[in-house]
Amino acid sequence: MKRSLPEEFEDLEALVPYWTRDTEAARNAFRVSCSIKELREFYDIVMPRLDALAERLEQTTLDNMSKEEACLLELALMVMEVAPAVEYYNQPDVPNSVDVEVLKILPVDRAYKITG
Image (cartoon, rainbow, N blue to C red):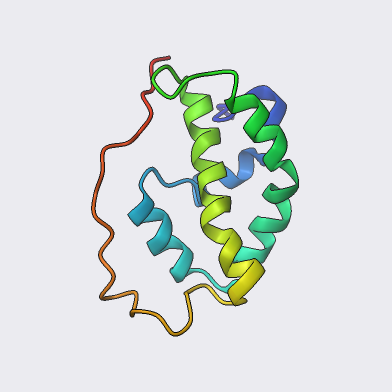
């Protein structure tokens, strides 16, 4: 199997195909499409590793990331997308807010460059 993450995160490798998205809009849409059970399972696996992910990502810059580092960043961004749903709302979407079908997240250029 081809590695998508830096070697020290191989235990998270199975999450990559299902949980990584490269835009905020894609992460948001994916979060609301999941069950709270799925979100909680992902959160419980990745959240304990968030400090290690951050330490690893601090070793690079956003304008010079390897494919593996970019994938790791996308996994970290997804856990941050999921955290409020698990920690505060106990549901995939934000309660008493604008309907997800109406919410439009404006596209922005990705803030990181994959160079290696």
